[in-house]
Length: 93
Image (cartoon, rainbow, N blue to C red; front, side, top):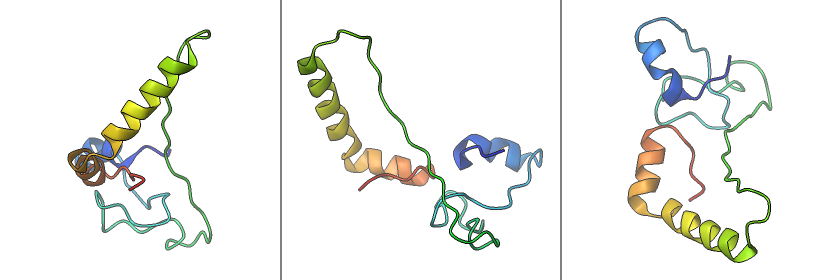
């Protein structure tokens, strides 16, 4: 099972799950005591989360580009970057 640290945090806190490592190349700020899978003995392993947006077929390129620009701007906001980092979600800053 490979849930995100944030998603699993409640179950981990209740001891319903036991985390053995994070799948990212670097330790997560949300769980700094957890080793990476590479540190735990599986060299060169890395898997990260990614997100995307989808729209129905036929949406104009202008609307798609406007939405992409708006979303990129939001993801560069310092408060959003801080929230993502604190949640253990790597941001591309």
